[in-house]
Length: 547
Figure 1 (cartoon, rainbow, N blue to C red):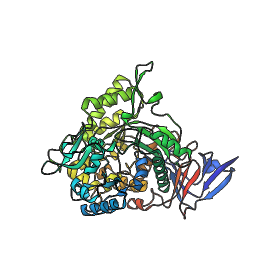
Figure 2 (cartoon, helix red, strand yellow):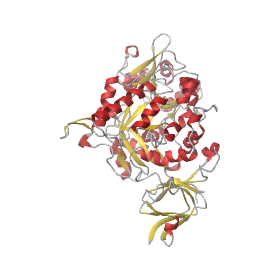
Figure 3 (spheres, helix red, strand yellow):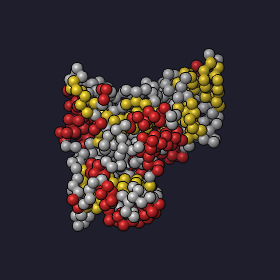
Figure 4 (cartoon, one colour):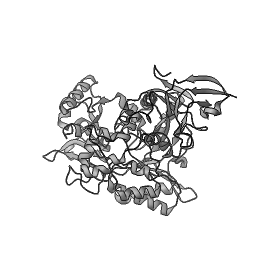
């Protein structure tokens, strides 16, 4: 028998509990066909000696804004690393604006008021430094933005003083009560409508850039949490851009796309009742191993660092503020129940514990209307959850999707928002894993950097940027974190039958590392480097020292 490739002399972590280790992997037609002794006597077109390097299944980020990662590569960087103070932020905005053509938009991303002394940029200052150009500064959370007067004028709001927020949104105010340029949650739609649709060619270029970035960091699969909607997405034709990028050979990352809730609509009587979904009646699961439709995405509330997630109690550092929902209670419930009854897997963004209760109630109501075994409805983020809520999630078979990277990147802000006692309930992981939940791994990039090895490190070590432990009882073992970032993320979108482990029959998606994340000291995981990334049996990325 002759196959395509044999990788040998490797330390393979298969993530299969029945066969956790191997030294050889056989690959044919893009799939794993054998391990170790199963390859005795087998000939191969290519044999690759990995010199004892570690091999793991391809990393799979269960909540990664793929298109945003690519598109934001060309926007102005105002993250704390690039603009550590508010004065620095104003300086880089002024310099960037001066380099743009007259009238061009100044689009910037990544500022965090928690790291700017608690202050957001201000409309009047942006007016003064932008040279008459419209400015849109996207917050690190992607749940708020700051704009200037010209941006509002371009969006059809010539008088900032007359601006009123839509339902599910709020406006920032200064000490005098005047609008200061801050748009929170649904209020962002007052301006973002003129920034969309993103041109197809620009979007395709962004997808290509994101795919290349993912390969360099060992990411072979991603779930894109929101396309084609108004709150999340780039245009009504988002999926076409992904298809185009794939056809042009630019897309080497396997993608599960989540349409945003407002992309769904009534589709008439389909013989089993009133239908609701996207055109042609397509729903979760349609597609192939490269590009497929996943859960429907909906945002129930806001963000932790923006203090807009809907909480049962006021934020520790913001008395009188318990956040808010993006929908009315009944409207949110109706949307979730309707999606369930129409056969969709659901992925609900839920940060606050008040929002979590409402979402869990709606999921349960949907099951009462139409029992669906193994629906695997998801809870994106689950930023804070009580013991009772954890038990409800586990008992119902839902999939929590917390982000380890948040613990180091914004963990100090989380502690300020929740207070030290409630912070122990933030972004729980071990509680779910110990209860038998297949936890996925994710980053929410570009909200925080998307490198999976940094995320594995944070899932295991759980320390803030200042070094303070945050919920140490929720720390995972390295083996649990690796399983989450491979098998768990595949399970979260019903794909565990094709990826997530390196055993015969699974896709030959794998990563070659310069050290073993299960063997190094836990505080060294972040130092491990990616040497090569294989997708579908082909090395799509190789570092200079990969073999």
